[in-house]
Length: 148
Ligand SMILES: [Zn+2]
Ligand SMILES: [Zn+2]
Image 1 (tube, rainbow, N blue to C red):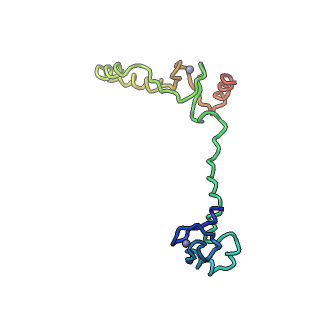
Image 2: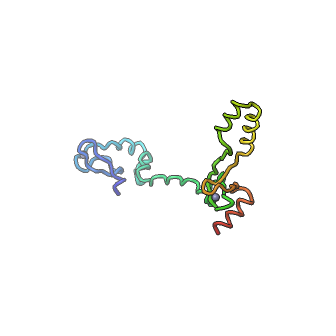
Image 3: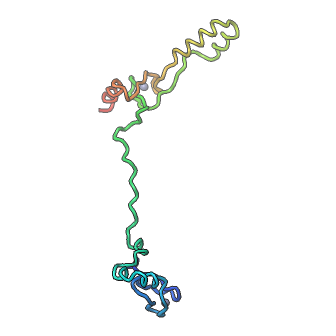
């Protein structure tokens, strides 16, 4: 086993960790002192300090399995076409009219701004249909309708 072999300091020959002296040049091996200090370990595969050489690499912890649900919970489904994703926010009216009303008559400007804010909807980018969050019962029902 290659992992049980170490290199001689002097001649770079491969030597077993159980050996005290190099098989090639007879020099004292770098781990000889450790073996001498722990004679019991020499009877094993290798010195405990060198055990890591024989151990297989720790298996990498697999990341948590992704949930079975195919979509992100914050996504929504279109009531009309079944498109799933992030709804787009649509603000009705136009900013030009808003500015004009504010400049010309203050009160209608305020009212127009309020109307735009209240009427702002989350809609499907494909068909401008109403979108419902997938987390709601109605959203789940639509998802079943379109994808089963
Ligand atoms: Zn040697
Ligand atoms: Zn749609």
